[in-house]
Every structure is written in C-alpha cells, then in structure tokens.
Length: 50
Image 1 (cartoon, rainbow, N blue to C red):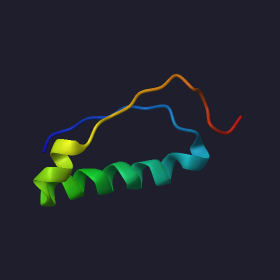
Image 2 (tube, helix red, strand yellow):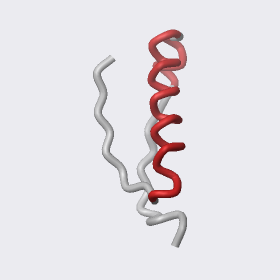
Image 3 (cartoon, rainbow, N blue to C red):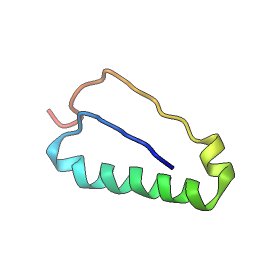
C-alpha cells in the first residue's frame, strides 16, 4: 500500500499520531476489510493543546 499523509499535530501528540497511522496502515494490509472501511477525516480544529 502506498500512502502519504501530512498533518499538523502538536509536538506532544506527534509520536502517538504516527503510531496510530502506522498501525492502521499495517492492519489494512493484513485485513482487507479494515482497509476498505477506513476513512480519513480532516478538520480545522487547530492545535489540540493550546
């Protein structure tokens, strides 16, 4: 699976966000249903940790 993602994430949340994205991509490779049902949601909520 080729994918590219760019997102603004506060420094405190960066490693967790990367781990979550990588885990989701890995799960999608192992289970086609996960890949099919996964969606990306983009918001403009800003930095979650002001």
